[in-house]
Length: 512
Image (tube, rainbow, N blue to C red; front, side, top):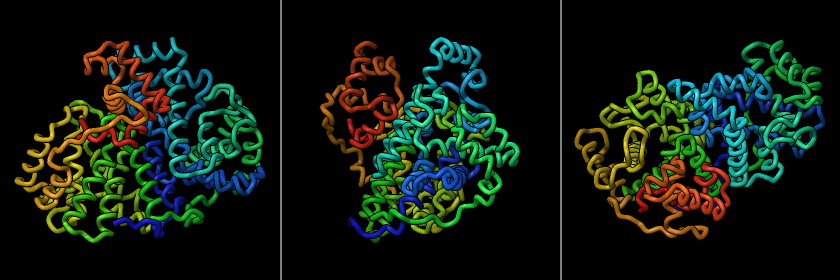
């Protein structure tokens, strides 16, 4: 069944370029913003004398720089409301000094009641914005973790840890500035902002922001190179075929897709582990119904990618405890379109994208985004839809608790009877899941059974007080468990603890 060391027909650069389109959605920018920013940085690199070996690193730093925004989306939403709108608006202001303070305070608790807005603003003022700083640190840590999982070099990993630095040393980590910042990051700092300003306000707006932030956010030599060559640097930033230098084997592609799936699920705490779980169920079910090996592999990989379009849906919508408005529901329905769009090229990804986009279709035509029905939904799509539905039922959501195995099986069979799910596909998924057969889990990294319980809860978004309440222990004891978990696993934040839990299979809802 394993395809092993065969060439997968895709290069790592192509895969990350596709994933960058999903990152664009999370930033509230048109697709290819990240790619255009890289192109601008690449051209500037020629004028500042960036060594050739670092120019390739610049590509990977550019593709991954903003990926960490996924990991801190729940925290951003809790403090500032719609996380996508917040990031889109952040391009309009220098986030240091009084302008930055004003930006954060105006958006504190946005979308919530007045008492919530006042509480968030007060906390921000009394702590000196520590929640914002911690979010930036978490962003950098999780992004560098992804780079390590993808086997990228130390120069890329180190640069990504400096993503929120500033030339004047007023960024994160505080005091790191000037020439201590990796050259690739200095280039990207400018390129990321001027791409937006040029697209929205023309070359004059791009020149203006570069001059205004010279010596503060931006490195003076990078700004000077930009001012001297702006027309050339900004013209014709359309993205053509990428130069392949790291072709992936089949095994390497699986590893990379699993990493991207884990990061996609970090966008919403209650979905941690969802994509991996769907992939395993769908792949096992595809094998059991006798699909060809290539289709089995494609179905599993599509499961890893099926929620990539959720980067375009705000956490405030994903975690809405009540009914969605018509507008919010339409944003959810568009997520599967985004999935297909993000994965539309190269050809090796396009096949996976066509399957992944059917995860929410139903054979009676009631699904989305195309509303396919009957024979128009391929067996790969029917299996994926059943796996996604069953797995989601076993996971908690903001509007409902997780269903028991028995309840989920009953709900799936109800969907078979009413015509939503294909009977053969859904029964194959249920069989692959063992119809609720439970597995015992041992604690990795020396975690005790209680610490495993706590890790699962915090990975699902529970705070210290909520952990204490759910497990019937004191808040102090819960805090001690969390500290020990961080020490044993080497985690430094909720997102890095979640990634540890994912890698060790602790977020499977069939695990007691």
